[in-house]
Length: 211
Image (tube, rainbow, N blue to C red; front, side, top):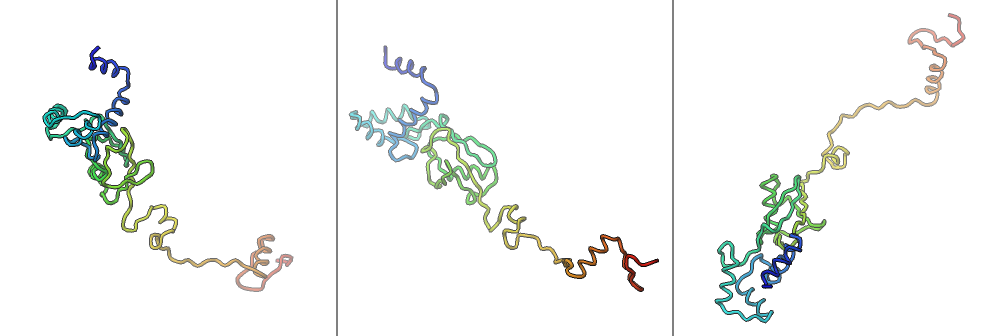
């Protein structure tokens, strides 16, 4: 059996996701500086550690065979790696190798209208720096984006609850009714009990008085 036939046979027994992960792991071994591409120098260095002494022509030939966009470097096929970005909606990003968190913010700004400086991109609840490369994350990872409200704005529920000074609408003061005490309170209870109506003018009459 030829070696390429052996590879084809083994590939059929593996799931596509497992193949993609192994390819990405192998790519990261060669991509020493983590910039998403394999240069001729990186290829020569790694192959040298593996005991393969390559000439410049051999390195050039390998690069040329694997170079898909003609930039003289090997790029990992971005269509094999995807990330999900969850803002107000869920978006799918195709990763080609050199994108950063800053590119995610620009993408979301164009799609949903949020300013880049208002966005906080997180993975697993941890904030991510703008210069972090997306190809350093696992394939099919989900990035969550929170939007900060700049300029002292607060959530509407806090304003309605009166938690923030100057955010609650002012209401004119109203005269409060003072509850009666002492004789006035007893008189009110007596009137309610016996249904006595006290006239405004004239002589007051008790409950047993003859009309």
